[in-house]
Image (tube, rainbow, N blue to C red; front, side, top):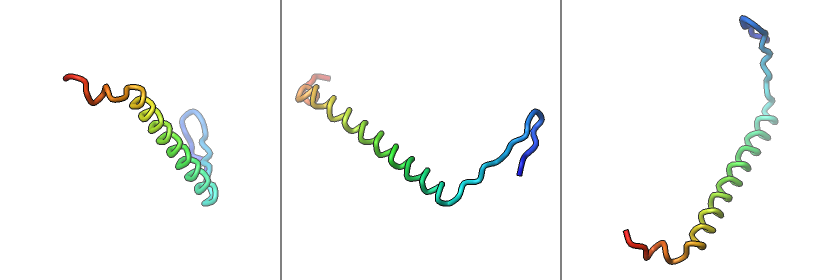
Length: 58
């Protein structure tokens, strides 16, 4: 099932259900790792700033 284009021909790749599941799991794992890193960075920043965050003047 190739689509014609002005300059080249495109061949579409069809993924199986198993491949879609693997890609989905990998994407979820990457998202969880990124969320975990963001949480670690937030906590590390808060710990470094300590109580000065709550008592600073506005």
